[in-house]
Amino acid sequence: MQMTLRCSGVDLAGHRRDAYREILLSSLERFQHRLRRVSLYLEDTNGPRGGVDKQCRCVLHLTRMPPIVIQDKDESLSSLIYRVANRASYVLSQKADRRKKRSLRDRERIRFAE
Image (cartoon, rainbow, N blue to C red; front, side, top):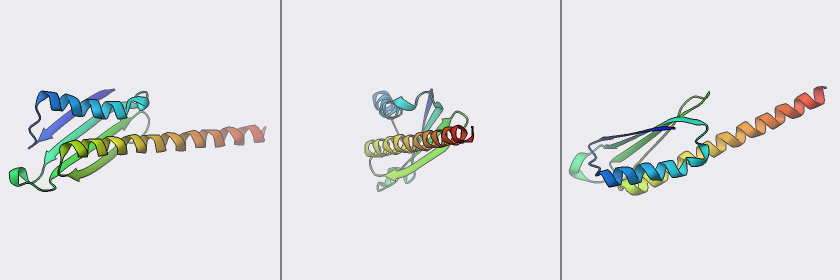
């Protein structure tokens, strides 16, 4: 899985950049076989004025599926990254559950058709 982290108006030191990358990777670890690429975009929309102006967009590129986009805003980058990572993990687990149920349903249909 390839990961890209882009920042616009947000100054991230090397250790914070690595920490944010690690937070996202650890939450998506169990879905590594389905993910081709993860793109994380961080932006400070208001500049130095403050307020709820940090925006994060996470794009999950899956194998044989359309990309999933998760977007959120917050005042704190840390809480924003944690929330987006949790939402990404939740969305991927929901997709996996739906796919598993569909394949089980299809197997049942084939078994009864024979």
